[in-house]
Amino acid sequence: MTPDARPTPSLRGTPKEQDPPRTEVDDLREWKRRLSLLLDYARQMSIRKELDPLLGTVVNAAREILQAERCTVFLLDKKKNELWARVATGDHDIRVPADKGIVGQTIMERRVINIADAYADDRFNPEVDRASGFRTRSILTAPLAKMRGEVLGALQVLNKKGGPFQENDEKMFILFAEQAASALANAQLYEELQAAYKDTIFRLAAAAEFKDHDTRNHLERVSRYSRLIAAAVGMEKEWCDRLALASPMHDIGKLGVPDAVLKKPGKLDEEEWKEMHRHPNHGAEILANSDNELLQMSERIARSHHEKWDGTGYPTGLKGDAIPLEARIVAVADVFDALTSRRCYKPAFSLDNALKIIYEGSGKHFDPALVYAFKQVLDSIVQVMEKFTDRPEIPPLT
Ligand code: C2E
Ligand code: SIN
Ligand code: SIN
Ligand code: FE
Image (tube, rainbow, N blue to C red; front, side):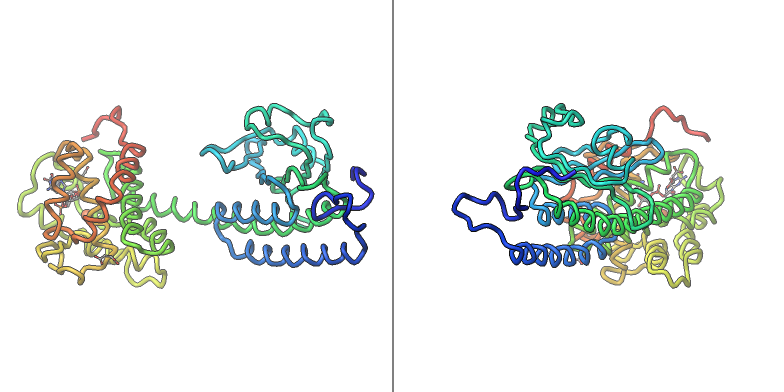
């Protein structure tokens, strides 16, 4: 399996004519260097919960430890029997059949494949290079699997600096792939849990909304607008992530408002407004008394998203900073979304009109710092609006 292109494994690049021959001490020193890199990266990988940053760490680690020009992580999509990989260049993932080619073979046979010269090996598909403009020379591919666990995919490094991959590269790669597999399995589990969490929250929140508009998109937009505004005022990622999950529940209290009021095509009368004005407190009651930080945040949002910066909002008439930041953010996001969407009581306004209302509300309805932040990320806001647009073909069900 190991190409014997060179009698002595060369780990630091091609030995030049004048280099002294490598000794066992050199080799031991090189192993030690790599092992300490491996341990260092194993620790870094183990603390990454999310898949995207973890993939980045795995790629950098593999390239450094194996001294390779390129590394690709292929993950198995069992449903489709495909492998997918995120490519650094371009914004799309690549997908290949899980049982074909060199990577497929690595997975099927659960072993390392070491190819000294790709173009001399008929398992190599030169189309891949033609599409990317890269020139593959040597290839080393290992299955991504925990010790006795199932295969998650494969790791591939290309073009070892200074010559083909050697037998000790294979051993190192197997060790590294085991560490990476264990970190990737955890990250996948974490992503599944997050997705399940999000799904539950959106279903719960959707139950409180009404069938006459595209609720899922409305929730997705408010969630994303809120995150963009929060990030623009410098809130840390963890807080922004929490806000993205907490904000869809802002109107959960509408569960307690009669349908006749919610779906009334025209203006609300005084009695109906009274009912409507109860939805923040209804929502806060539903979400109250939780030990969970996410639910605590959504309680504050549900209670205070109709408060206004100048103190003229409801249910309490809180003013300025007394309104929790998360609720001030959702107020901007929610009103912008209400303005740019069709409601049973109003048509969708044009973007310009909606922006005019938001900007005029700065310092009155809204925290001026947040309107300023909203303006700074307007391009991204508009992208979200266009991506999660309500489907016009769905007629209102009144
Ligand atoms: P919503 O439709 O999600 O609207 C959220 C907020 O967006 C509103 O809070 C308001 O601040 C802002 N907004 C919505 N439409 C307009 C508009 O045309 N102009 C301006 N300047 N702002 C607008 P608000 O007013 O406290 O209303 C809370 C909820 O009460 C609304 O949520 C909606 O469910 C209901 N609602 C409000 N007005 C009416 C109405 O005339 N008829 C009916 N059937 N429901 C209404
Ligand atoms: C912040 O900078 O933390 C948000 C701005 C605000 O509190 O209004
Ligand atoms: C809302 O969904 O927030 C209320 C307006 C409607 O029923 O479409
Ligand atoms: Fe509301």
